[in-house]
Length: 160
Image (tube, rainbow, N blue to C red; front, side, top):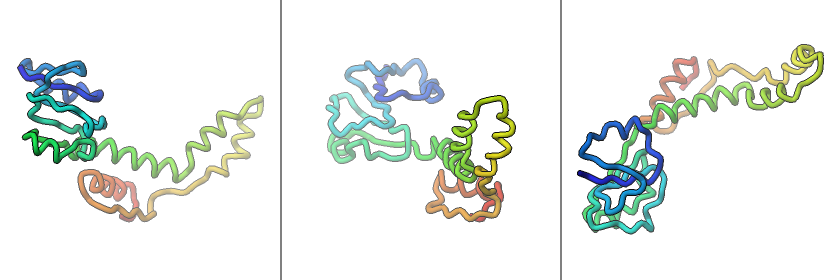
């Protein structure tokens, strides 16, 4: 039985990949491995049984690599695992900012009275915005995330 300490909330999609030979929990003591997202391990006291640290994400800046190397602890990450979610967040930001939907939503929620349709018709021009098709998007780095952003922005008619 391998004991895996979870230092953050980890998606059950990933955890369901473990079979019965793995025991995982946030409360595990004397762990064989650590699964972490964003918690800092720089001040963490590594036990003698610790063999590996897996970072559920791209970077390892929250893990003391030198200390792990000195203690023979293998560190690995999962670049690209959340690339689609990040791409969607970036594209949503582009779309939201093109027409300022956030401000428009706040404005609409403040409307009241019997003449709301007239208020909407009179005030909607302030949120006209622009289309993203034909606009230019610069992407620095075409890794797992950048490539997805560039491809989908291109499909939406942007110049990339």
